[in-house]
Image 1 (tube, rainbow, N blue to C red):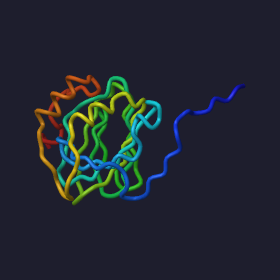
Image 2: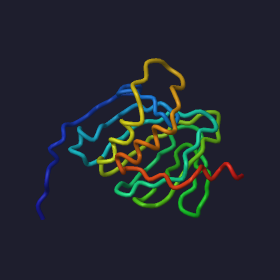
Image 3: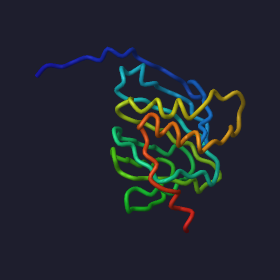
Image 4: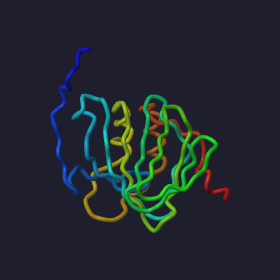
Length: 164
């Protein structure tokens, strides 16, 4: 059995380090590892969110997405299943599986990991550099437009939590 080695450079980023971007769907991303740094294998960003932030039902047709809850709590809809996930919990949405989440605590910090890293263009195109702390601009139309342009995210419907 032969072992292959990665051509990606090693990366060390401390707490608070990484490029900060306001996501137009809500939240501030701190990019911990970019797809370019892993030769497209994956990327990782931390997402700081306020209470009530929710996503529409969506899926990633060509990427698996893992969300690790660092702080706070979210309500997750994954396919037909709905469950609360608190600090130390994880949600894995395999490619093509519809999912959504809503922040149920005062705030939440999530660590997102997607593989492969090919869908990074969606998050970059639907965000801008964060210049201050706090919430940035919201532009849901831009998020939907970038989703359509990149094909990395398919919007499938409104947030399921509005009906509760």
